[in-house]
Picture 1 (cartoon, rainbow, N blue to C red):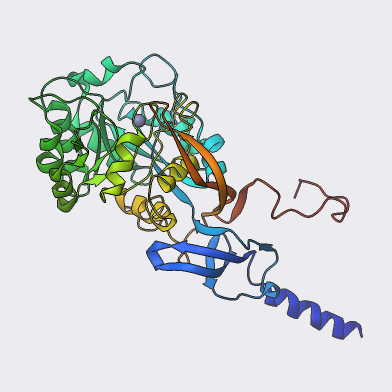
Picture 2: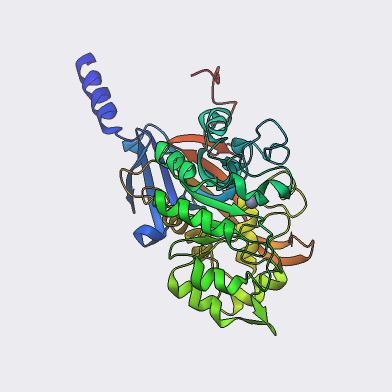
Length: 409
Ligand SMILES: [Zn+2]
C-alpha cells in the first residue's frame, strides 16, 4: 500500500512540469498572431506553453483567468524615473518605477532622457538596479540629462555625441537609444548632435520637439531629418502641425511611409482628444502608446499606461490595436525583439486585463473630457514568472480555507 502511494505521488509530482498555469483567458499576442482562447503555462520564469487546453494537473498552481485578456507584459517607452539629486536633474518630477508600472500591467519602462552620459551611472545605481520593473534608457544628448527647467536642454556645449555613444556601448543591456527634448533655438543643432550619437552607437533616436519655427519646421524633421526607425513622441500635441482644416496633413503619412515612428507620449501637456480623435478617425494611429509619466502627468490627466490605453480605445482604436502598440510595436521600436510576446522560452512578463463596460470619463492634457463605454483595468501582472500585482487576489487562497498561512515562503 505504501509502495503504491509512493508511486502515485511521484507520478503526480513528475506531471507538474509548470510552476503556474493561467487557464481560460483570451490571449492577445500580435507577434505570434494570436487573438483567442488559450491557456498559458509558466516554468522557471519563462513562458513554457501557449495552447488551447493545458490540464491543471500539469501545474503546481492554476489560476482561473476566464473573462480576462492575457497579453505580453506592457512596454512603456516614454517615462521619467530618475529621481537624482541636485537641480541639474529631473529629480523633482520623476516617479519610482515599481509604484506605477505593475498596477498598469507594465513590465518594461524606458526612461526618456532623464539621464545623459554623465548622470547615467547614478541613474543605474539609484533606479535601474533597485527596480523589479525592467528599466531601460534613452540617453539624453545633454551630458547631465534632462534638467528641472528648460534651460538645461538648450546647452549645446553639453552635447557630446562621442561620449554619449560610448556610454550606450558600455551599457548595451540598459541603454536602447538617444533622446533630445525641449530644444527651442531656431536651428537643428540638438537634432544633429543627437543623430550623430545615434549613428555612432547604431541605436534609434527619440525626439520630443514641442516648439516649432519657420527655420526648424516639423515637416522637415519627420520627412528629412529623422531616419527610418527614429521615434517622434508627443504625436497628439496641439502645437504639432498635424491637422489642417481638420484633416491630417499628407506629409505625416509620407513620414510614416519612410519608417518614422509616431509615439503617444501622453505627458501633462501632450495628449489632446481634439487632435487624437480626428487623427485616429482618418487612420493616423500611433505606432506606440506611452505615458511620459512623471509627477504631474500622473495626477490630473491620469497618464498611467492602462488609462492611456483606455483613452485610445475610446478614441477609436480596437483592443487588438491598443495591445499591439503597447507590446510588440514598442519592443520593435526599442529593438528588443525578445520582449512583447508570449513565445515559448520568452521571459514570462504577462499582463491580465479586464475590459469593463459602462460609462467612464477620461481627461486629456488640456483637461477636456471624453466619455467612453469601455475601461481597461489591470487585474494581474507577472514579471519573470512572479506575480507582482494581483489586485483582487485571483491567485490567492480564501483565508478561511488557507490554514495558518504566511507571507514568508
Ligand atoms: Zn518626457
